[in-house]
Length: 215
Image (tube, rainbow, N blue to C red; front, side, top):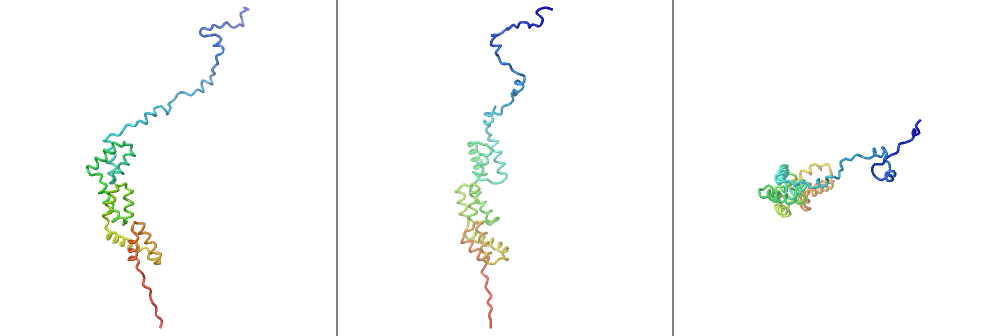
């Protein structure tokens, strides 16, 4: 048998320092497999998402016309609608000015229309009407002017009519209870204290007590 049998052939190091290579840590297959494969990072391109493209004037007009097609809006209501849709402030101002010029935005006219509707259809008094006009974000000057058009005599007549209809549902109650409930009902509908008292007095007049005479 050759004396070289069973011996390892000498290793030749072609590149790098022999001692450095000898001390280089080995990498197991388990370590390699544990390495996650590179994927998409949600943070990549986040700056692109923030840079939304501004809406064009045509797109802004489309949003406003669709909103006005559902119901009449005050100027501030329209501005809020456009702002919620991401329209910038300059475009909002231009669109609101345009609609005002063509008569599609008119706070004064809308306030007067709402006063008539709230009086005739819902039987509301001055206080409740003022609250509703404020809720609709109408200009303060438009609200003030519309409320000045409410005639005190007409409001009393309307309160009396509302009280008369409501009193028909209170016939099973004693007068004190009926007066209390009817007064609360009218007050919640925005009528003043003096108007409520006058309307209730007419709708629920004092009952004449029968006098029994004994002989």
